[in-house]
Image: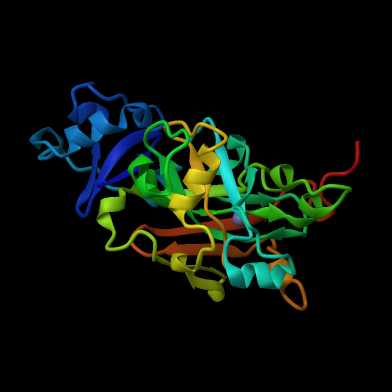
Length: 291
Ligand code: ZN
């Protein structure tokens, strides 16, 4: 099953178009694509019944798609989670998932334009997991049962803010507006032959920058959920950015960062692609100044 946020409304996505959930369910489920995660099991049951079929199809216009989980209560990111990216970063291999947050105000849609606050914004293509039921202290072997679905994201990162100072500022450096595009759809785990092995990558104006598989993760989606939930309860609709493979701009020689006028395209097997045009924010290229 595939869901999306189309024109700010929850829809089911089929090969021949989308179905408006509120209308098709006669109001049993609302149009709120975030609220549905609080009733995810009930929603899955409804979609698998005849009630979800035979309804009017809506054309899916790309520019009207928003983030599939637009207002999560918590957004987690996992750093240094592919061996080749750890190696290019010059960091030691983590013994546990390296977890940070991205604030929910950084979320944006799959085809939205993103304003670059400085000349040091880097790309990080990532598989993104959305939680479908409260998860607290779950075992690795049970973790997939807590996942509503998978989507695609970019963990955009302003490297100066992220890495400067006496301690790194991952959460702020990765939370400028637009720094968390996700989409274009949310796909339930049963749709994949192997949800732990998906090809993913990204390109700038057609030039490939990252090209890998999620099977190369150091900590799998299940291990990430087990670790985070050993400390923080994961809530329905929470979002986890699961790490990026090698090929980021800050690790290149010479370094390369995103520039206004470029288009960042990202892809992942079985979910689709993001295409985000880039423009300059008023603070470009220097970035936010000390206050
Ligand atoms: Zn990342």
